Length: 383
Image (cartoon, rainbow, N blue to C red):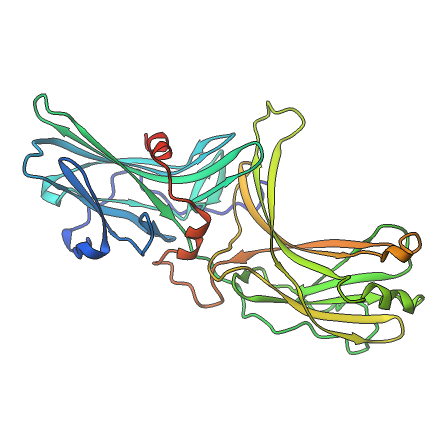
């Protein structure tokens, strides 16, 4: 996994953050996430309808501790493990702690930075995540721990709470409905159109023809939308081949999600393990003829559920990527004479369309990718 394309992080405060006033903590108990302990309750504010509290980009893990009458508190401390990747190569992103004061209502706030330093690389703070491959498991967890020290010989109390981080991201431009067919209908890609990205598929054997896939050259596509494409079959010297390859059901275009996990160097001959899933298959809407031996196949492919999918990466450790794959196999009757064609083009998915992002709210649909942490995970991560 490449360490390129690093981004500059905003400064993360080294000193304790300013404690919030009580007025900043929601008081509607029916809508708040409140964990009841033996001697204290922890209020983390709105639940967003999820099993655990969730936060978006630029948010803060913010709440307050409410002591019960018989708490006999000596001190109250809040600790946050703001990101830990647990897997074959574990790493923590940020750890912070605050001593809570009675005059502040035992309130706390831990900012979630936009970027963090992970193994010397500046990286966007990754979302909560969990996946299992054949040989390993990788989890990105965010945890909060509240410790109550009590006077005398009374038993101290510790509450560990998982929280989720689901940052929103935005497409860089408005979507488009389709890819235009070249005016001269020769089949050559629109090389001078910077709004279109094209690739040439690779044949399984030498051939004088060509097949091109063209999609919008957007840097990012919103999940839940359609990506238009144009597949050009260019066989001026063998017109029958173009028709043969474009027969019904022979063109296979799919959007695939690939999650990769970096493995320890001790695993000989294997440094990355990956798991893939087909997210959508293309819908072919129209096939048009150009000049002799040239066919244009147009359609679109979905990008999964709205707000559900997005690229992210922890360099050299774990990432989620998307790509459009194309396969145009030769029919069995001519497999020895006509090549099969394959290709892929990487795409970046984001949670929201152009101009739709509100960073103050988490991308709640991403919660479907993360199971609720088990009691073992909570005790393991929140140290």
